[in-house]
Amino acid sequence: MNQPYLEFSDVTKTFPTPKGEFVAVEGVNLRVHEGEFLSIMGHSGCGKSTLLNMVAGMSRCSRGGIALKGREIVAPGPDRMVVFQNYSLLPWMTVYENIYLAVKTCRKDLSKQEQKEESERYLEMVGLSHALKRLPREISGGMQQRASIARALAVHPQVLLLDEPFGALDALTREELQEELLTIWEASRCTVLMITHDIDEAILLSDRIVMMTNGPAAGIGTIFDVPFLRPRHRETLLEDPGFYTLRNNVLSFLYQAEGPELPSEPENTIMYAEAYQEQEDKEEELVIGDQ
Amino acid sequence: MQSFIKTFSLSLVALLIFLGAWDVFAKSIETSLGTFPTPASTWSAFQDLWTEYEDERAKRKEYEEGMAEKEKLHYERQERRRVRSEELGKEFTPREFKPAPYAGKPTYPEQIMRSLTTVFFGFFLASAIAIPLGIFCGMSKGLQTALNPIIQLLKPVSPLAWLPLVTLVVSAKLSADANMEKSFVISAVVVALCSLWPTLINTALGVASVSEDHLNVARVLNVPTHVKIFRIVLPSALPYIFAGLRISLGIGWMVLIAAEMLAQNPGLGKFVWDMFQNGSSKTLGMIMAAVITIGVIGLLLDRMMYLLEKVFSYERG
Image (tube, each protein chain N blue to C red):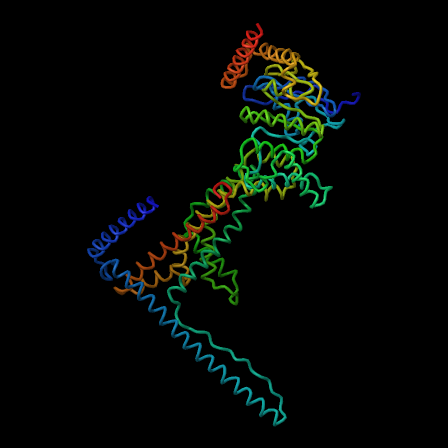
């Protein structure tokens, strides 16, 4: 706990625009411990992805810096693997070849045979042993995201970065994959930063939830601790009254943040409003049910 | 199946109408060399070309048999001399048999083959330059910007404009005892100069439009440059590259005929030119036959490239 594993100090990102500089993220200070699962939540356009990209090393901080194990992050590297929302599997390679390319590139300490076995092992872990020879477009979105997760984990990253990993999937597949990710993560316990819009997902998976304020010049609004014991199960979690308290806290933070400075993405905002309405309806039902 | 029959019958009807119209119009066009070739006279020209080929082949066979006979006699003679030299105790150096090459004129199928060899030689030459250059252009914005004006300037230049210069350069650089004929090299180089551009432009475009997501994979994994080019950039750009190659080969084939006429490369272009110079009523049919041959081969080349495109592209595969 004394030496932070991943440390953000005064992380600021500005983008040049014709109208002058746009400050996307400003003054983010955060310490992440080894083996911690951290979720980042906030409204669309608040700079969550910008933050993640800087950890990945795909863009540099304009001010401040991010250090992993005391060394500043300046470029992408296999110690920080990203799982993208759109899977980003190479469409001309089979599922197996996609994973093998990553293993071959990043785990040079292994022999060729070991690299092959490792690729197969990780695909088996995400339940894709039957689809090794398939091309990405021949399998479902859920399966593609499994492959993408297998690819990231097979590299043995120190930090796993998930950018809305299940955002494009249907609700059932999403829940299934969340549970699988939980199981896999509990076995490997690497440090994870995950961007998500799904409160239940954040609570189920993470140790802390970082709430970001709205952009421009977004920062950390508050951090919620998720105190539930591991290993977690969705069913037991849903029975815990603490779950609902935490969820309400997260929700009300998001409501607060939703103010006059809404990000200029009307589509997403509408989606959000609907989602919240649904959430509210559900909660009303719950209250009525209790009475 | 039903749609195939429909397509087929519609095409057939159109073809018959076309042949009918051709026949009517051809008969009404009088030229200094007689009437314009009708479908019938074109067909008989094809038949003549075929008989000519068979005659020529028979002649050649006869010639080769004669040569084989001569060779046999030559070695028998050598053997007799050797025996006599031994008897006299003299030294004997045997002489090799050198057959004189057959000097018959090229037949129509041989001319077609010559055209195909020339066009492919030029096409491969162009591709060997255009694909790597296109990759570099696509990967470097600076190079692309630098080369773009030159490419745009050279792209519309007609093959006929290149020809005199190419002829002079090839004549100056190609030594007389080189294996390849000058006319062949000149035609191929002109084909290459004109079919370079579509492949170059399409390759650059394909490479430049590799999805950002796929490039991010390369960046996150820190793959070495050659892996990035061969496993990520090229597969992604392949559909573009093949589309470019297909256009290039089409242009190359068109350019070739003009180049052969002027460079006197003994292919279809020269055949058309020679028939024109011959100037008899019969040769008009021959020209028409050549026109149709050129069209059919162009169509087949295009189909071939289309199939290759399908085989190698992940999108359609």
